[in-house]
View 1 (cartoon, rainbow, N blue to C red):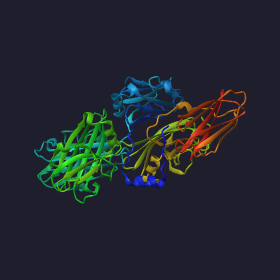
View 2: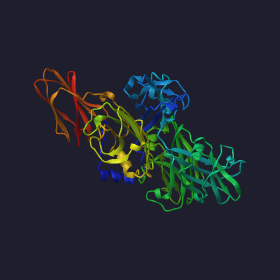
View 3: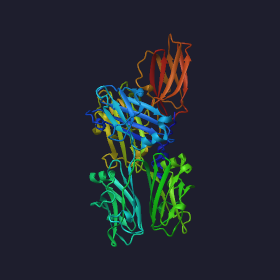
View 4: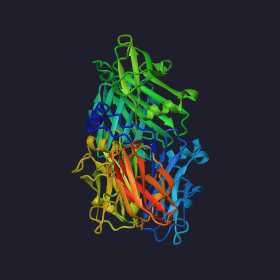
Length: 613
């Protein structure tokens, strides 16, 4: 079992505050699928729905799958991962039917199934999940697999993209980052070499080589050679046009009233995107200056090439050195890669390939442990610096059942879901479905495994057809805050679904950060037993727990300990030599939380909950 260290609130808060923007602390990646009938080709009319999580580990050679469906017209007759983009039917990549248990599917892909080319398909939206029933043999619900990420649109501007083209050495480099909840677009662009003061900057509708009308006026965001700010509540037309590649940025001045440099906003699912906002304040110690920079970085989904493009304005002199360094924000670290050979005035553009682009280096980028540093003669240690952060969201998964309730609830109901949090810790994307119950309410609660806690966020109004899909935002009446992000990161939030029969909760799921594979062995355990005299003490325990029970006419007894995900962490079979038997189990090596002790006597078994503090 992976140990989960529960830091004290004060220590965790101190670490969190120090790296308030370094939210991507894990190097695993979460791919998800929202399943429904409308994605089928042709579409199917059904209220059935599902949620799938596909967690890819740090070495990108294992995929943990956790899928729940609800509301199907009948039992699952087949479920497969298929090759194919959205709206296109494709052949079967992986048959998941052998892993079906009721409305749950849990599996692990390794070896050839998790090859580099297949991992690339998981990350770039080229797989979908299809669920078949007797009534819909070709598929009743389907879901495209997408990486949980906000969207980054890079822009590289020059005169040749103007219509008609403009002869100029001026250029611009920057990013437009669209939040997954579609509520805002953050942008940061640096221009250099313009023929005069910037008189205007606009986003326009239009494909490459085509002129179009103004979509958004960014002129008020121009500060010399820097264009930065936020577009709040962008229009559907703007978002749709960005996603279709039909938005460009145009920068005007008095010498070129129609625009001196222009650049198309570009995004592709073939890359993982990163960026950095660069200034002197991030140097350690900080440097007071007006210099600003913008870096765009991307890694392809086959992980064999990393590209970078950086522009800086306002430096005290020429760039004498440029490097990727290894350290978190606020800490100095050693050089990981020298970009100095790629310096071209105030621009640095190049790529990392081959043996230099190691898994270790890629994971440092994913964890936010890389920064860019630019040196000048006046500041040989670095004049401006910027921490590199990814756009991929921090991913969480959970399984829901009655075993996790406090006290435990005997129910066949089950479910699963995901949470992802953006790098600004501004919102949490959630999706989950459940089956086997009629819900009266659903909430995010505060609490670690085995402990009950108060409501953090009411999901009841979003819960329909035994599923919930949406965003917990900073703008909500119960706002999502940095403290809530900290609670998720500390495995201290759970989802609770209440019913009229179980008002305090019928099924619950601990939201877990990191890479987890699931075990279905605990599903459907019969919690009723004829085993008498069973006791666990002390409970809660800080270490050892003594299991005591009475047995008659049984020669062998097996004691199994499961974690909250159903993973077996202890198993011992012992001879029964007297009517009164006991066994001491040492839990001191395991992290605090909820566990289940299962006693098996012949064909009979009983399961009891224990809390380790």
